[in-house]
Image (tube, rainbow, N blue to C red):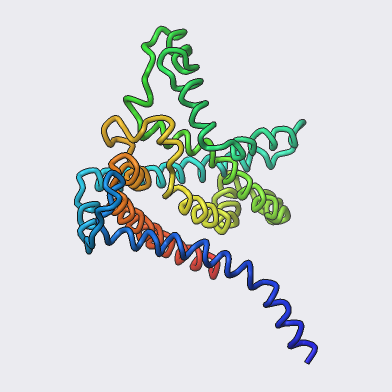
Length: 290
């Protein structure tokens, strides 16, 4: 009897948090779903009507949609490649004993705590500015013409900026996993004559597989909604060269004042994100069971 009362009391205390979380997730989703089926323009808020699936059809058949979809995929894949490969290399480097190891780890992890807007401004004005940026000064010092990264390679610039911010996260997760690797296996393989590359391929990489899948899952979920870096640096341009699904929803909703079309785009983005998350979760499940 006492056990039942304690369980009821525990559930009663947890209930407000669960209800609040449920409302926080469901209410915005239901509201967005409602607006996606009506014609609602901010310039004429009093003139609304049922639109059916026309908003979805308009958003999906927009010429910018295909470009935005490919840009979103390119950013996710590009950032994952840089952060996973770079994270492994940095984790291996930071796992070696050297003087000032703690300070170096703090500096390596620090970029992850910088706000996306701030990091985008830093890269835009201090590094990639074709007139006063650091890369421009280096190019001039070498006798080369400065390269306008944000105009000539906007998508690559976004990938570099986002990867710089997420690299510390991948490094931290991979370093934690690397430190749990059994040193006796490494020593035994070394005594048997295995080279450093062989030990890395057959011992280190399999041990890091689970950590890599976790990095891929978490980063993929967040990378699908990259917005601040694009808004601050390129505004989706030139043209739609760096426009993603998230930025296209912003353009449709707030720049074109079409709340119905933007809401439909938001639902499309949620569906695509859940499809990606489903396949990534299946991949992680297989790796965890292995």
